[in-house]
Structure formats: structure tokens, C-alpha cells
Image 1 (cartoon, rainbow, N blue to C red):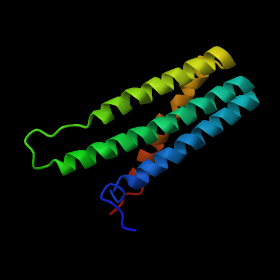
Image 2 (image 1 turned 90 degrees about the vertical axis):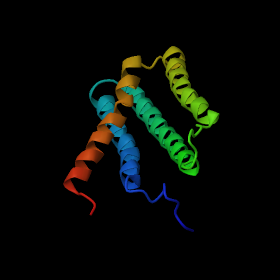
Image 3 (image 1 turned 180 degrees about the vertical axis):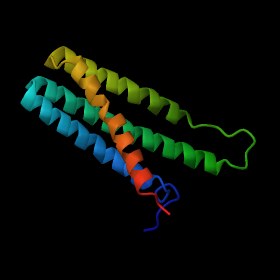
Length: 138
């Protein structure tokens, strides 16, 4: 099976690295919080990290579709963005917000722990960027 241009782009390995590092950092932080501080905080951290992981995957998929649509319309003067992409972007943030609200309201997981768990994506992006600096692809 042949790879498409998007699947074989130079940033694909970095994107995959960011995906799994998000879960690793979130899991390690959750484990440390559960052992050292509070088990409920550990649950909140892992929930936030998983939400960050899904947010990154959905964002990646949306951007890949946007690149495909713009490439297909390269000869047009005024290319159009598919309306579904706008809808998916709104749904992505709405789903994350709704999930955090339901978990906070009904499971009584601290909101701050979930927000800190969402930061695992930022830590993963920084770590993947530093790795790329230290190990450049020729």
C-alpha cells in the first residue's frame, strides 16, 4: 500500500512522537500524583492527558484534510474550505469542555488536575521539538 503525501511528510514522525509522549507524560504525572499526593488528582491528570491526546489527534486529522482540500484546489483563485472542517473544530472543543464539565460535576475530580493533565500535550511538543533539534533528519 502506497503512502499519501501527508502520511510521508517529514513531520509525521514528530507528530507520532508527540502523540505517545502526551500519554507517557500524563501517565507518569498521574502515577506520581497518585503515589505522592492524592489518588483523585492522579485520575484527573490522566483524564486531562487522554483528552489532550484526542484533541491532538483530531486537530491533526482536521489539518490533514485542510491540506488535502487546499492541494486539490490549487488551481482555483478562491479555494473553499469544506464546512465540515469548521464543524469538527467546534465539536472538538465542545466535546472536551463537556467531558471536563461532566467529570468535574458528577465524578468530583478536581478541575485543576484535568487542566494540568491537558498540559501534557505542551510538554510532549517541547520534548519532541528538543529531540528533533538534537537528532535532525537529513
